Picture 1 (tube, helix red, strand yellow):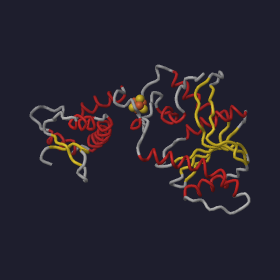
Picture 2 (cartoon, rainbow, N blue to C red; picture 1 turned 180 degrees about the vertical axis):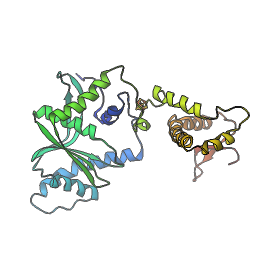
Picture 3 (spheres, helix red, strand yellow; picture 1 turned 90 degrees about the horizontal axis):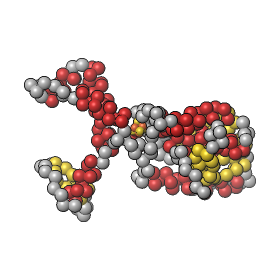
Picture 4 (tube, rainbow, N blue to C red; picture 1 turned 90 degrees about the vertical axis):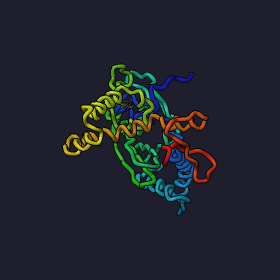
Amino acid sequence: MTQRKLFRPSAAPGKELCSKYEPIISTSPNAQRGEVVHKEICEIVPPMFEASKHTQVQPPEKYLGYALKVLKDSGLTNIGGVEENVTLYDKDNEFVTEGTMDMWGIGRGLHIYDWKSGNERDYSAQVTLYALAKIQQLNHPVAILHEVFVDQERTYVTEITRQMAEERIFAIVDRVRDPKSPHIINRFCDYCDLRITCPAWRHEQQKFAAELPACPESITLAQRLEQVKQDPLAEASFVAKWKSMQKYVKNSGIEAHCLEAMKAGEPRPGLKLRLSSSGTQYVAVERNGE
Ligand code: SF4
């Protein structure tokens, strides 16, 4: 029987900052490359690691060489599992979630490896969750976590006890289960599926609207902006909110919706379709006259 996950392990870093966070499933080229890098590390590095115990090996890609170096430098002696399914239980031994851990092994202790490509972000809650699941399974007191950014060739190593991992992960679990847990704006909002309907962001919009030219009719937008420029605090506040609103509007998908409508033959006054450079398809909308 498939049990219902409270959340996916990859959502743990966002859930730690806002328990309501729901990650957008990305199909971007970066996400696709991430899958390829991941697959290659998991398929190619373990046999290279075994071979490197007896002979010199030549990794075919730089990031594979870095992954191999991380394994060797960490003092790993045996790889215990690759892309292994692990299950997390709560303090009452109830099922919480399950997921695929990149790699674990035994050296001077229990080692957990999480391979990441692309931009560096703090994924430590995810690797801590995997580590706790493995600690529970093996009944181990401590684990050494390796959060490896192969593109930057940077690795964050943390040693955690079972108690430390439980405190961090069970706090996330408790907040996710608590229906009264608040929406908290954080750096993962740009990757959250709920951003358009999120009450915390609705509140931000209202605050932004209050800062905008809620000005007397006698004053124009341009004049109001000139006034804002004269007040450093007002200017800082305006620019910060304006930047988050730009992202908010972009994430709302309104431009893509407009493009699809116009491609389907529904005119939008003042706008026209822009052709791709090859002239074979419409790729954007732009203002008439541009
Ligand atoms: S958009 Fe809302 S629900 Fe999503 S992470 Fe941000 S505050 Fe939380």
